[in-house]
Amino acid sequence: MKAYAYPRLTGPVTARVTAVRLRGPGESREHLESRGWSVVEQVVALGMAERDDWHTARLSLAVTVPAREIETKKHWSDVAVVAVLTEGVTNARTVARLRPGADGGKEWIGEIELDRDGHVDRASLTVHVVATVGGVMGRIIGSTEQEWLVDVTSDAPLRDRQLDVTTVSFARGKEWLRPFREVPWIVDISGRMPAVRLNSDFEGFAALVQSPGTKMETMVGEMLLAQMCAEVWTAVFHTAIGDLEIEEDGTPLFPPDWRGAVLREMLPDIVPGRSAEAALREVHNRRVGEGSWTDLQPRIQYAAARRADVPKALTTAVRDIERFEQETHA
Image 1 (cartoon, rainbow, N blue to C red):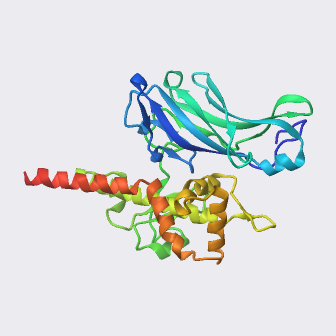
Image 2: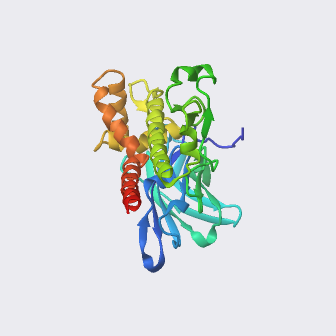
Image 3: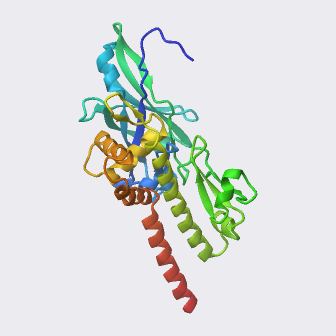
């Protein structure tokens, strides 16, 4: 653990990418679809853009800082929040200063721009809280624990560049899998990150998802993958909301890691029209019995389906199937 000669924040600093805009020739702009970044993996995949002639990518950021700690401890003044985008291969470095949101300094928002000519692979995005400490300006008093990765070429927002999908026999595998031997897949949330386990005992299913052959099999496989992603979002939401730290006055706190990012991403669709903190309190209260938890389930499913792009996957599959049938009859 690194030691510092000045007081630093003990509370977490977390960052989320909330939107990505690409600029092409002639100042034309295009929004990257939300499936182009993952708040769980903390990766932006610019290779998922529908155009390949973009020049710059502008990332909108929302950063939460421990505002209460800053206010009560009085160690720091001239507090600022900056985002830093770097890539070691090209030595590119971009810095953007964020501005306080409307909640009194707990959330800071802003944008940072990536120039395509200055990057060839993956850039790292880190956020720092900077302040004057003991009369010394520019001290870093807190940073995000894990950086975001902005991948210029990848067509999937994955940190390890491969989907954590493994095939295993549910009937002969680990004991916890055996009761699920009749289902094709299960979402495993026992590790640091969620993963999908495919049931090798479900005849033909693993091959359909991982290495489809015919055009029809590819359509079905993509549709199934979208459904799996929706189940991952649902599972991690329930994991996050079920393990909250609660303050003495009963206020639930956002987890400092990817679970907090998942909650902030999904809550606007689950409890629309509320601030993130108010929505978290509402969902927590319902989960512990103060209101109907059941009534929220369709909203949770809706939020998960949106982030997994299930509607688009189904629409595309239906159209492709109709086109395939027309070609077959012709």
